[in-house]
Length: 352
Image (cartoon, rainbow, N blue to C red):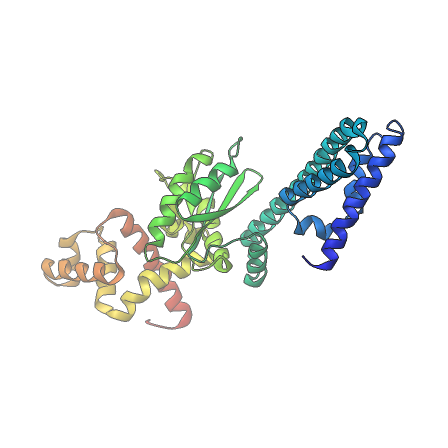
C-alpha cells in the first residue's frame, strides 16, 4: 500500500479513537460524532478502498481497542460495541451516498451519450464518453427506437441483452425511448443477432412503431443508424402492417418521399446503380416491366421481345440487386429507385 494511503487510513483510525473518547466523555453534546470520522479522509481514499476493506479496518481498530482498553476497563465494553456499530453504519452511509452519486452521474452521462448519437455529434466524442461508461462492446451496433412505456425497466433490459451476448445504452427523450444495441464481439451473423435482441426488447416499448436502424461496425458510427431509424419512425404511419421491430431500410421509399437524403442515397446505391452499371438493357426492362403494371405479356409487346426473354432478364435483375421485382412491395421500392435514378441522371448529365 502506498505511504500516502497508509497515512490516510491511520488518520481515519486515529480520528475514530479520538471521536470515541469525546463521545464517551459527553455523549449528549456530540450525538452524531461518529458520522464525522470519515470526513477527514481524502476523497481519493474512498475511490481506492472498497466498503469491505473499510469494514475490515473498523474490525481491526475495534479489536485493538477491546484488547488494549476493555481488558483494563470492562465497563467500557458496551460503549465500544455501541460506538463501533455507529461507525459501521456511518461507513455504509458514506459508501451508499457515493454509490448513489456515481449512479446518478452514470445515468446522466448515458443520457448524454444517447443524445449525442441522436443529434449526430462527432465520433471522437461518442467513443470517449462510452468508454467512461464502461462500454466493452467491440462488435456491430444498431439503434432501436420506439415509444417509451409508462413503467420503464432498464435493469431488466440490460440483463436480457447481456444474456444474449450484447450490451445497451438507454435514453428516454420525452415519449421516445432510444436503445443503442451493441455486440460484445464482431460476428458474421450480426444482423440476425441484433434483430433477435431487438425482438427480445420489444415488450419494453410502448405501442406504435418500433424501428431498428441499419447495422454499423462501431458505436462511433451509431449516428448513421440513428438517423435512419429516426427517418423511418417519422414515416411509419404511412406504411401499414409493420412488424415489431421493423428494419429502417424496409421503409426506404417512404423515407425518400419524405425528403430523407440518406434513404435516397441508399436506394440509388442498392438498386439503381448496380443495374445501370451492369447492363442498360436490364434497367430498361425493369422500367418497362413496372410501367406495364408487372405484366409479362405487355412488357414483351412494348419491348418487342419474347416473354421468356423478359422472364430471363427479370431473373438476372433479381440476382443483381438481390430483390425480386415480381413482389408487389419490392416493385414499389424499385419504382421509387428508378425515379430517383432518372432525376439524379438528369441533374448530373449521366445516362440521358
